[in-house]
Image (cartoon, rainbow, N blue to C red):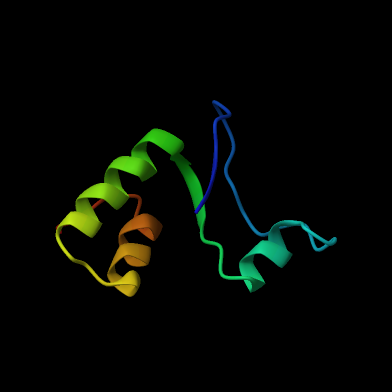
Length: 69
């Protein structure tokens, strides 16, 4: 999970150079978009505690935690 501690902006697989975002995505990294590190940590903790699958967890992150568990 790639997050940012910046106040504004988001994470995305935008750069194609070696070690850039596109490389990380190909390696299996997920991008938190505009969710803060703290929010992602809480969402992942709750989702994993509920035993959700990787696909369900990825959907929750993509929806920014909006919706039902």
